[in-house]
Length: 423
Image 1 (cartoon, rainbow, N blue to C red):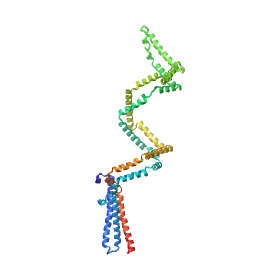
Image 2 (image 1 turned 180 degrees about the horizontal axis):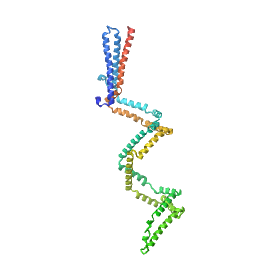
Image 3 (image 1 turned 90 degrees about the vertical axis):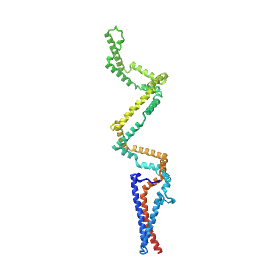
Image 4 (image 1 turned 45 degrees about the vertical axis):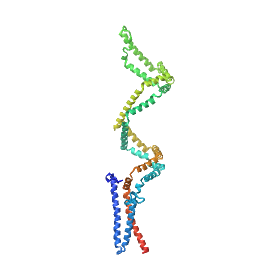
């Protein structure tokens, strides 16, 4: 497959390509320089014997440059396009390299002891606390969280949510019997005399209403009297009824042991017992419950509740000055402050993070490392070779340059030793 055109490379890759070409030119220039020096020294060494040392150095430099050029090129492609064994290593063994890299990551980086040691030394909780403790970071968390929550709310289908709410209402409100639990609760209230305050409140409220609404008794009884009864007598009857009602409630209010209070206590006790043990009372209670919360009403109530909650939440999330966002911002700042100052909390959070991450690594480490293998297998061999060459090729050209220099020094040393020993 053809190499990726330069126009399709990223800006960073184009910069790497430029650097690679420069270093290739330098390495090639060194080889050409050695070849020129070798040719000159070879031509005049009979006239100037000292040039034999120069020729040996240049010869060694050329050999080193060519050997390293072959080695570097063989990593990415076949040198000169020749089918030489063990060349084009990266394109041919791409998948094997991916598997090896995956195994290396799994065994050396995703080990439980390595991950735990790194997390314990990092003190993640303290860093999170410092980050959250800054106002701008807390505002950013609230902003991003509000956007995410609003997106989730808008993505939810109203009909589906209403159906879920209605189903939950049917399951948790309509299906269970209310009578026995409500009767047991009422019995405990009566045993603790906790209902006294409610009775007092009801009596006080009724008495206040009677004092403020005496006119409401006009005609309450008198309109049922015969027409021949004088109007004055009718008003007296109505006033008497009002006074008796006020007198009765005042007596109930003043006397904690009033017969009406005891009668109410006996009635509530019978009701609590019947709600727990009398099938007829339990049945009437269930019938009343279903009459109030039948399925159409439950669905309508669920729809209204969801619609109101959704509109309220979306409005609060969109308003930067809403109480919801202000509370969230203050809470995040408080969490950051506590993480910085509370050593016990920070230690528990660090331990929880370490346990969670190491559990995930132990359970899913192989799958995580396998992503490397799967990703490399999907890569095109030629494109993979090109990308790797762009990443490390510039540094590899230094090997060619160093090979030229080392080869020249080696050639000079070898020739010098041989000449000294053999003449």
